[in-house]
Figure 1 (cartoon, one colour):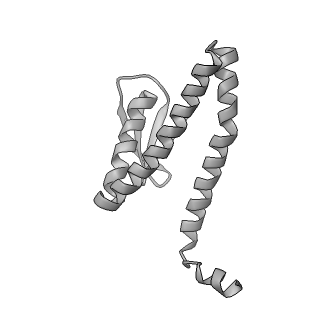
Figure 2: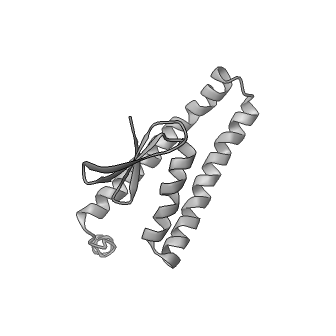
Length: 131
């Protein structure tokens, strides 16, 4: 049995395991926060529990569907091309004032956005909102 389990190890680089661990931690965090969404929507925003449940279910269904869609598109068009869409959608959805172009830890350029929100960092094809 031990030999069989060792044969399943694809011997990938350490970076792949770190990235997957980060994704697992992110998914865990989303699952931990989701119950508090009901409390916030109902107690703070005054939304009925049914509508709050529908909002949470819609969020989860969209995340599930986008995973399958993103994977399929990455296989067909390549991951670099597919990453362009969420990086641009984040700017619009989060309504940022400035988009920063960074290489490593250094900001190389910035572009004003006619909207409102927080700063946005595009670094090595990934995105993170910064204060």
